[in-house]
Length: 72
Image (cartoon, rainbow, N blue to C red; front, side, top):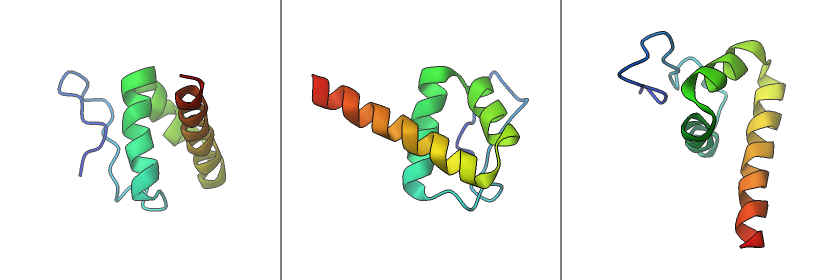
């Protein structure tokens, strides 16, 4: 499953198999991050951070989404 599959950008295609430690909920957040921050930024994040830092970064993104929704 290509989660960050941008037809115009063939340089990075994150797959669930490549990051099997991420949950389905985290993958949903990764897709939203790609839409918000750009696929390149998300690919750099996934490649540069270790597993614990990936989980923490994704959790912070989700928390920021929840906080923004509460402020509406």
